[in-house]
Length: 155
Image (cartoon, rainbow, N blue to C red; front, side):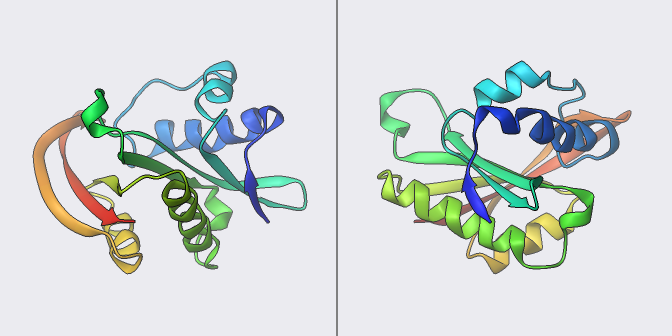
């Protein structure tokens, strides 16, 4: 079931997020997120995929940049539990997130994908995101520079 995140989801969301921080380059952030910060970040515009009381993934959107002129453009994060890949739920989660953003009056959504994560680039392309730029060596993690692929979808 896909639903809006609630405060009691924070621990499970943090576990998914922190696993990605520790083990992957899907996020360039090397610092784990405390549960309290996750609760604040997911308090609005965040959806979760829940199965049998277990959070299997989450997706949230947030302002692309500061300033009133950017108010109709958002960026998003989507992360799935290791056991949550390959069954279409990630796609449903993103479709629900895009529908939510559109209903809130947003015009476009960006995805910032690690160039090392070709699966994420392909996933977003299947959802209608277009590659608009590659920013060379803007991320640094695990002792190496990593490119960022920016993808955009008009809602």
